[in-house]
Length: 588
Image 1 (cartoon, rainbow, N blue to C red):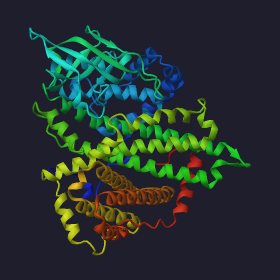
Image 2 (image 1 turned 180 degrees about the vertical axis):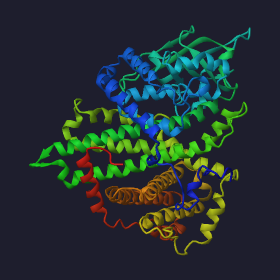
Image 3 (image 1 turned 180 degrees about the horizontal axis):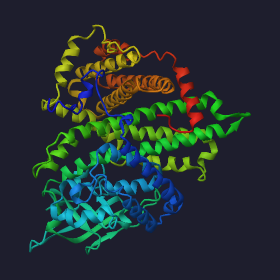
Image 4 (image 1 turned 90 degrees about the horizontal axis):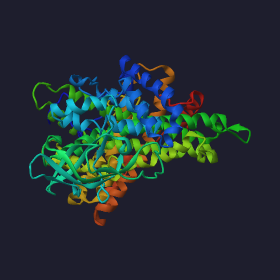
């Protein structure tokens, strides 16, 4: 394995959970906390009061708010210092995205600008391209848009039909095609457009709004995120100067996929912020609303919902910032000298493409859980526009579709793992063989002297063993989609639980006595949920991919590995629900 100052991508499945260090929200510096407070104040003072107008598609107001955002420096977080940016770490970038997350539509406009709208230029643009366009984007004088999806290709962008043909005089490319579901389309000034040169070589181009032949279609009438612009971008013989080719001709796939890694992570942070806000609405309403003469928060059915939401939120937050810590550590180890810095920078990010996919799936699923349960707690009022949970519910659904559908991301996780194993980066197949040889022996006990979270560390070790056992039993069938989806679900569950337990274990000693009780409670809830979810995926995987003659013996081998007693689970949920009702917001 390479660069052992930091963990390798996918390595979490092959190594013991104990004694791992990771970045957690408790590690935020005072500077990062101040940036978060500034962002939150901006959201409360400038966005929420005008959110209804923006939801009515007052796009001039949206752009005005983007420029206010720029004046605060919030669009400079990911921008290199040599171009007037702050170039802060990914943890800070995700924290800003999280704090803007509750605004829904504005959060998508903002992340579209700071993420996929600007990052292709930052990572792949020439010095001249950056000089020409980057300042306009960071000041929000210009708004950026990313044009990858087409009417006939969403999850398969490399099948794009948009073409780029070099003009006879060699001065420009002629772009023709239609791009679909383009965020910020109505008011964007600079479009990163993907097209195939001569219909073959997938490439990217920087296209200005006023270039002749570019037009914007009608606004899509969406279920949610109504304050964003989503429309087609139509290209009819658009003359794009040759100097506006972004990166190398025929290498557009690198831009498309590498930028999406950070896009997925930023979306994870955005939906985490929205989920926390949705939870707060549910917790407050459960106290205020009375039925049968008692607050809703006094009923077990509601208390269980609050506790389950907290368990998922804690796991989502823990894994998100664990991934940002991995990225920051690997980026920090890079030598900035040399013209290939951003090429190496992208490889550092690509190292954790699987973990970025995990974050996208888990965080968007957490948002789905919270939005649904928050509305349910509100009852009929949750279905009424006057209550914020109605918007959270509508806005939530798209998160499991864009930045790569959750199905695509679930498939990507094992695919990347196998690719890294086959190339020798991970010793996956050796460990599969070792586990198969030891099959039937006593299962590993990974508590390692840690009595506090010993059962959870042990559960993690047994889940990893089950994962490897199944890989060995599946053989070549593991690449079938139904099996890959189940393997992806197992990996997601392991990473989420491990991130949660490691975070609680790391921070326990410095926590207050009250916080310690809450940490113990939330880990118990998260572990019980993870044990059940993992076992379902493992059973599904075995049933799909193992011959009947071997299935019984295999399930007898790994069924005990997934056991988690959940002692004190009810008390843990009641403790979390009581604390949430008292505080009216997310607890950690």
